[in-house]
Amino acid sequence: MSSIQIHILAVGKLKERYWAEAAQAYLKRLSFYADVYLDEVPDQPVPKTPSPGERAGVLAAEGEALLGRIKDRDWVTALTLDGRRWTSEQFAEQWQGWMSRGAARYVFVVGGTLGLHFRVTRRADALWSLSPLTFPHQMARVIVLEQLYRAFQILRGGTYHR
Image (cartoon, rainbow, N blue to C red):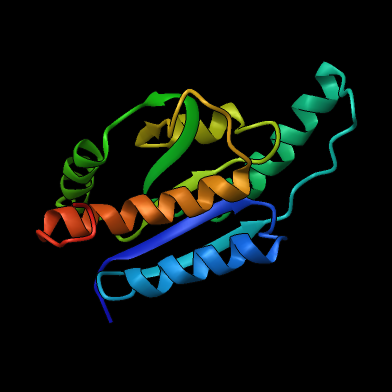
C-alpha cells in the first residue's frame, strides 16, 4: 500500500450508477499511486425555496458533519467557487507541493447543494475552484478524482495527459 492517503470527503451519496462507476474507475487507477477513499456525510434536506435561516441551518449541519471527519494533521483542500483555478499542469505542481508537506492525509472536501459552511472553508489549507461553471456535487467528486490521476500522470511523465 502507498504511504499517501487521499480522502474525498463529500456531502451526500453518489446515487446514480454512472457516477459511482466513474468514481470506481478512477479509484482503481489511483490505487497505483495512493490509498484513496470516498468518505460521505449525509446531505440535509433543502426546502425548494429555503429561507436564510434554513440555508444557514443546512450549511451548519453539513459543515459540522464534515469537520467531524477532518483530523488536525490533515491537509485540507475545500472545493469552492471562490477558490483558486489552475490548469491541469498547475494543479499537478500544487499537488506536488502539497505532497511534500508530508501530511497524514490529504482531504478534498466537496459540499452539498448549498456549498460549504464558512467554518469548513476557514479550516481548509487551500481553496480550489474547478471552474466558474456550476457542477453537480456528484460530478465534482469524479472531476477531483480524475484531476488527481492526471496530476500523478503529469508528475511521472505518463502518457495519459498527452
